Length: 472
Ligand code: FAD
Ligand code: MLT
Ligand code: ZN
Image (cartoon, rainbow, N blue to C red):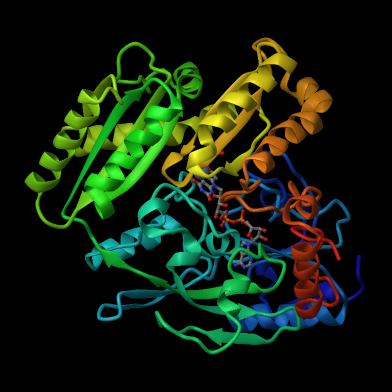
């Protein structure tokens, strides 16, 4: 143990907020998927940016590595410490205050430890929509969302977390506080520090607060499930909705029959209301600010056109909020069903929509030829070209044994197709430790060297989440 570090931390924080015994630290050491478990010297729970800054000063003076942590729901091991036992976890959950909702400016200023769902609720109480929405919203925190530039189900209308962020407060590796808490939609004053920290996964600074955009709450939302037979008609359907519904289209999610079969196995009450187990079930949501009748009619007209042109073979429109929620539940439960089934090989990728059909047909064929019986759990935010293209062993084969033997070649096969189609190897989950090794090849040397130069400039001691995203 580093001599005196814990007692120095005690000069900043009450002892009860410095967790150093094994039992208290345990809940912070394993990621949501249970893929990574690390050790930590201590888990510290600061109450404000000043405390975070003082902790960082102590860590800088003692060259102690720090792991920023929110809800620990990330999929890339970014918030999990290494196995040395020398790192400090700074968990921000006590920093959970909404500082201000500015009605005229349509912004919310809040601390990094606010739970996403609470932010949505606070915004709704004031008649606003905070549009970021994802399956982990009951436990992920806004600081984690910003640090991973999280996506979710509303991106095609409102953008990802980066697009929702106007200002930040950040503690640097040296323990300085940068106050960039401005709610400005225009600010052309040189390098954009905000955009540098968003998506940096705790490697450049610790986000302690943010100013985020709010939107008017829609008056009415209509949700439908439709069946498509192939990817080409699914994309034609998306284009039809984009043309006819324009900005009223707020959700377009795809679930393949294999993904829903997994749901059905682990959550039998999650039955697909569409008949005949279609190859693709598409969840579409329209949101309107005019009237319930207006959006309902629009949805019906577009669906009629889609039927007539043969793009869809079946449709169910939710007739009430609870049915609409059950459609969304079915979509969100795929991740939970995968976790129940076993740790599959995840690929969170984006492909240009024009290349999606080619990507899926070629990659499916290559995988099935090399690994007969392999299960491809393909679902995701199709409206953004974002697939969760996950690979599970053939039924009856042990996950651990399959992954041990095949993880590397499966990733190589899938990512080679991603590169061929000019896609990205991380659409919304980030890099963390999971994709650290593949990043140089994917970004190219120049981009990767620039990233390293930025990391070295901001964190020359390499104490902020070392060996995540880039190694220097
Ligand atoms: P953590 O997991 O605690 O941390 C993630 C990264 O951010 C780490 O590198 C950590 O060091 C860093 N970090 C955390 N807080 C800070 C801070 N204050 N300052 C600096 N760095 C920080 N993600 C999506 O994008 N879209 C989805 O649809 C989606 N669905 C999900 C569904 C489920 C069921 C689950 C479990 C996860 C899902 N995720 C999704 C992944 C995850 O929820 C997001 O990545 C989320 O943004 C992580 O937030 P967190 O607070 O849990 O961050
Ligand atoms: C989701 O969209 O549900 C998560 O990002 C997905 C996942 O499990 O890969
Ligand atoms: Zn997702």
